[in-house]
Length: 214
Image (cartoon, rainbow, N blue to C red; front, side, top):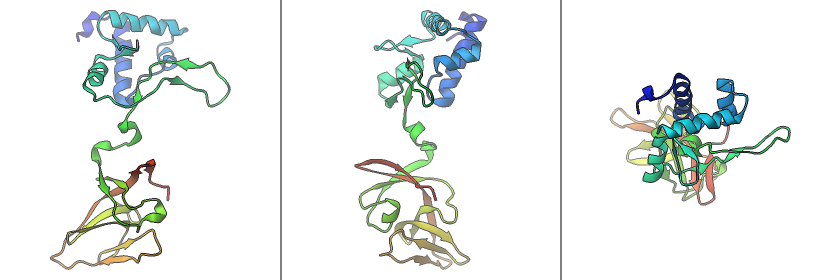
C-alpha cells in the first residue's frame, strides 16, 4: 500500500490504528481513537474509517467489521483464531453499552512469551498440591529458573517436574506432595544436569491454569 494516497490526517489515523494493532494485537477503542486525535464525536472516527475503506487501506469482513487487510488474510487462512472482543463494559459506574470490533484475544494475549513456550505431559502426582495432576499438560518457558521456582529437570535421561533449589554441589528437587521425598542431585564431572524450563501453568480437561503466586 502506498501511503501517498492518503491525506496527512488520514495517514496519521491509519498509522495509529496499524501500530496499535501490531503492539497490542487488538484495535483501539473508538474512545481511544477519539482521544488520540481530539475528535468530539465517534462519527469522526467512523468517517475516517470509511475513507480508509474506500482507498483500500481497510477492508470489511462478512460480519461488517472493519479490518486491516493483514487481519482478513489471517482469518481466511485460519491463523487468526481467538476469542472475539465485542465491545466495552463498565467496571465502575453504569455506562452506555459500547459495541465495536476490538479484535480478538489470542494465545499470545493469554500466554505472554508464547514463542519461548512448550508443553510436556505429566506422569504422577508429586506436584499435586500446586494443582498439577497426572495426565495434565504443563507449560514450560524456555527461560531462567530461579531458586525456588518450579521447573523441569533432565538428569541421566530422566526428567522430573519439581520446585528447584540450587546448592553448592547440585540441586534439591522439592515435590508438592508430602507422600514424596526430596530428590538430591549431585552429579559427578561426567554427568550432565539440564534445567529444561520454568513452569508457567498447566492445561487439563477443565481448562487452563496459570502458575499460582508464591
